[in-house]
Length: 233
Image (cartoon, rainbow, N blue to C red; front, top):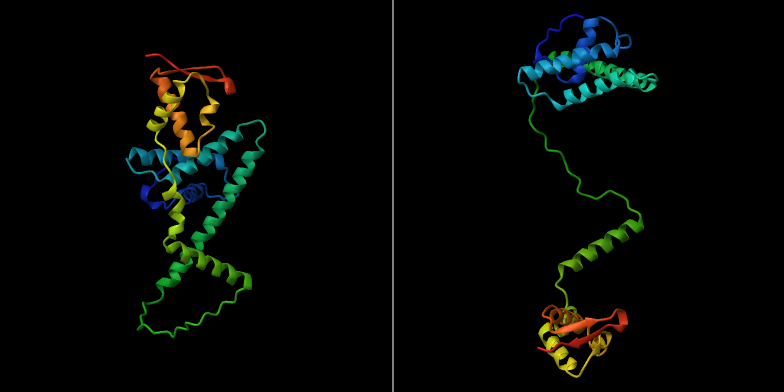
């Protein structure tokens, strides 16, 4: 295999490098064996790394792609490798056509001088010319109304339930439980029977946990048969 010699900074991307390697074979893209390019391409990437250059991710991605094609081509059934090679050849042909066209455009552009003219103020028509279906206008109206309402402060009535809501403290329910249990054992469920609000029920439950943790009460049984008794002390 011919030893590679190249300038590292002349290739704009992995496709450019592959076209360079193919040109060294002096054959068309459709005729060159893709697998012969794998080691040459990898050698180029290694050379970049030896020169302490930043290897662009697109070069590494193409290297991984070529290695994968070579790997699946070694399998007994390698239809996938053939398909991958056809796909890569198609991309190379498209890239080659783009390079040729870009070169022609560059030559044409170099044949012209640089022209400049004073800016021209163009008339602007501020009239709205789009046509909308009725349902689109209705949706836009509903959306605009909703956004307008969100900017308004909430009415006083929205706070009435929050302000009027009575907060029951755990300490008050602890005193309630101590007074209740002094009369004897109590069914756990019955402690919540007279609760007037959710806050009171939560406070009662937390009070039971606090008394149990402090070993002021004992809890026996399961489910509805759970019994709570005040301990001596």
